[in-house]
Image (cartoon, rainbow, N blue to C red; front, side, top):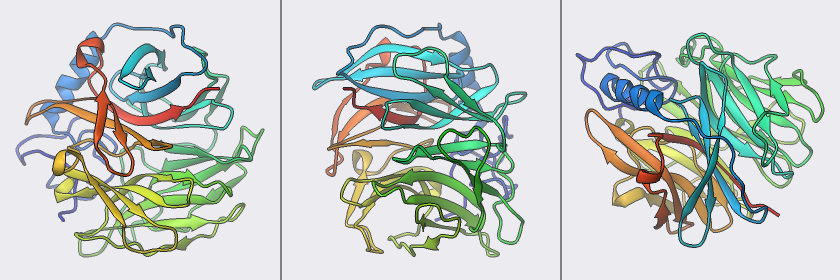
Length: 363
């Protein structure tokens, strides 16, 4: 596995920011944060997002399962109701100008949390939207520099995977702190703890039913190759233990979820990030018991986050992917088989790139 996730040519210059997984290697260029698209793909996505018409929240049955997807290029989160046969678009949430929404999560009260990294003059934050609301009930900013992913445990404690440099620097071995996990106890708008006992940069966070925290992280060794693992933290601890996970071809881990039975489900990058997979590690095991390769080969560029709800996965479905363009739309997949059940009709959405995912099961 090479050390960066992108599809590009050396002659193409960087647009916006270097991706976390590429930031320490100047011979490659990235799009922004952990989105490994080439410069032409970035430009077309930004243009398409700029043309997209705004849409506010529409009515939705309280019993419906809602699927949220962050639209990193349009300062918004789209909302779809997932039925047995497909998605129904029910609205979107507008975020402040200059926002780059990344990871998402939903707590037990069905509140949506949106990790926002700054794009240009934007502000790093986590915005919280009650189900059905169009404006946030809370906005966390203190202690954040590059919010990338979020998790909330059963006690209401918020964890934010936070990059020290939102452009993704500091991930090399011995290059200093690349980021941390910022903790906010229930009811607190200021950080109550910081976790920084891991090398490199944080990627994804998740919690289990016992309120233990799981973190994926990445760093580049002195050889230039990426090193990645999952660390587990018991409730209230800032000192974790590396799980020592292993997989064929190596690990380059991103989004993570914990299944009800304690299995770890995690995104893993392959082949320079051009193909990406989902791995399932049974509780206490170091090798995966299940591998999901979208379409037989794997998800394409720009795949990192997903949502797991019961026997379903919600993740990007690829509508088009060429050298100059990539289009993804929300998709539903069976878990653990990984077979695609249905996807959002691209003709019904004006937004081109679904990135972060969260699912709200409703009442």
